[in-house]
Amino acid sequence: MRKLTTLIAASMTAALALSAGMAVMADEPDFTGEGSIAYVVTGLGDMSFNDSGEVGMNTLRAAGYDVKTVETGDDASGYEDTMYDLLDTGYDYVIASSTYKDQIEKVAPEFTDTKFVLFDVNSDTEVASDNILYIYFKQNESSYLGGIVAAGMSKTGAIGAIGGVENPVIKDFITGYVDGALSYNPDIKVSTGWVGDWSNTAKMKEICNTQNSSADVDVFFPIAGGAGTGAFEASTEIDDSWALGVDSDQYAAFIDSNEAFAKVIPTSVTKEVGNTMVSLFKDPSTIEWGTLRAMGVAEDAVGLAENEYYEEVVPQEVRDAVETAKEGIKDGSIVVKSYFDGTEDDYAELIGSVG
Image 1: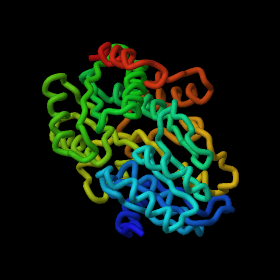
Image 2: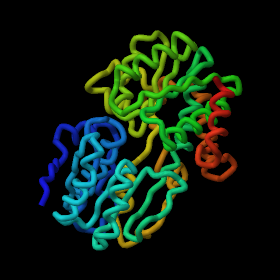
Image 3: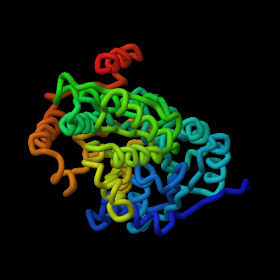
């Protein structure tokens, strides 16, 4: 058997995530499922996407599941070996993001006794095996709400969005963000940029500083995993500027460890990975394997972090606009633009229209 490096999440990381307000409590309706779960991530400690899922894993641990978190690092050349090692060891379930889509779709037909949850896929993903559940988060809906906040908080009428790696999911975030900002201020200007990875905080900070100096951007939206902290650092140094968090409540994640960062985060555009996994595994017998499930604002799978700081610093009229938008999305009267509903040319036209 190939050597597998598995790490149960360190207690400090778990405590950090719990303090971030991302947890779902295990004392809700009784769990009826059981078994072993491998949660596969590039790394914990991003205070964002991966940590959000880890809080869900902590809840599943408390509910009686045997859960191990496996940190693979960013080198994709080892992902396939890691998957085979996991399956040789034997797990009832493997949970992983679309980062591991190619590897999971290769191994799943060979290991039919294992069920796989592949989350954060594209909306047009085709089901490759009947033991895989694909989850598509409607991140455009939550970023629409974030766009309203950004446009409402901006004093210059110019906001920014900076992605990590250029891919359809991040472009969907940006599409919704622009759509929401335009709904609040039809004259809003939006600058976009790309870091090129998920960890380069210095590059993120540089892009934010450039957006501010060249386009007068005063609200940043980093969508770049761990690299996003570069936007918070930039915002602490730029007068009268803000930076939205992403994937989890990043104000809560930083308030005890880095108050300066926390104080520039009026809200976060959330993708409730942990909540979603807990919801699924309360009773896994109800999961429809071999399907693609879309989850958005109506399912409470995405949204905004509306904590005490949000209530304090975001003007009432902006919060009212967010509430109106949420209700409109839920009842269908607001259909948020999505990158997946158009072409690359449509996306380029949208970005060009606000540049």
